[in-house]
Length: 106
Image (cartoon, rainbow, N blue to C red; front, side):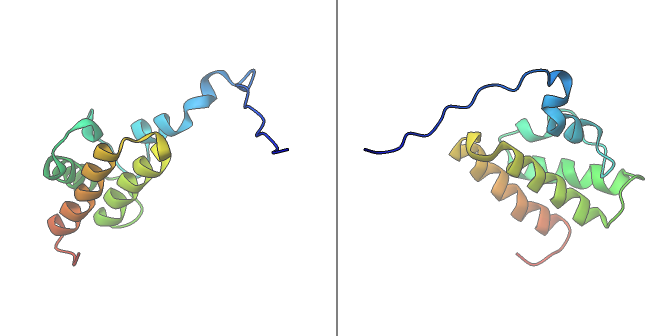
């Protein structure tokens, strides 16, 4: 007899703290993002927007490249398995374009 995996129930009483990753993306100290930057289907556009945000940000702690790449990785990792394959592919291409934009090797 195979053991079944217990179903998860939604946590009670969590309220507004449930979407902490959305708050990080919108109000991060790493950099000020342009609105809807991750919704674009163009990797070059995503990379250019992240670069602009990182270069213009005065609140970042590391280099502009580190902050931009960190925010992109954060978005990909937080979406996890719920991110469609086509969307993930676009964001992975944006990583390469971001490296190119900052003159880094692939």
